[in-house]
Image (cartoon, rainbow, N blue to C red; front, side, top):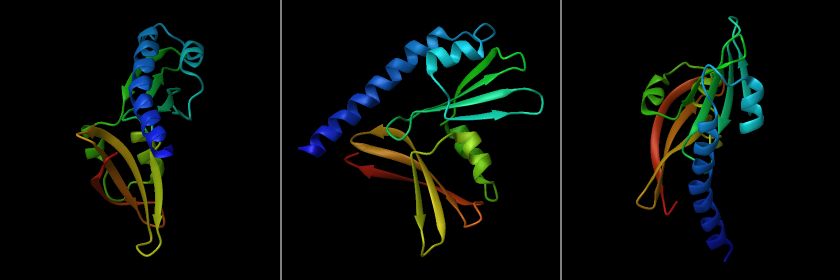
Amino acid sequence: MNKILAGLFSGLMAVFLPACDGINMAKLKPGISTVQDVREIMGPPTMEWQDADGTLTWEYPRTPQGIVNYMIEFGPDKVLREIRQVLTEENFGKVHAGMSREDVRRLLGQPAHELYFPLKKEHVWDWKTKVDAGMDWYFNVHFDESWRVLRTSTNFVAGG
């Protein structure tokens, strides 16, 4: 019974969160909305980056159940410049051997899962990328013990 309820809840969340995001995102206007507006509508970010030029980027992940992660960028004037959904094939293609975990986090946002495989001495982060015919698809980034990217891979989990 608990498995059924968990499946139902995760299915509802997968439908509900994107709908809420769509409503909330529609309220945000690049060039007009401010940092304060975004915080009131979206809540606090899970991560924040400040660049030397004054650009500010906030992270809003929808993992582990969702298949999107948002990065919201503000100019030095604290006015919204751009909202990006970062879990894209283009961004997955930018991940390469030698990248740091910080670079990967900034590119793709918070992972859905973080695993460690002691025999291989690998850390693996994954992001759900799509739900298709009862399968959850994941993009994986494999790190060595010094948190440098070794490789990427994809997999699916049936009955997701």
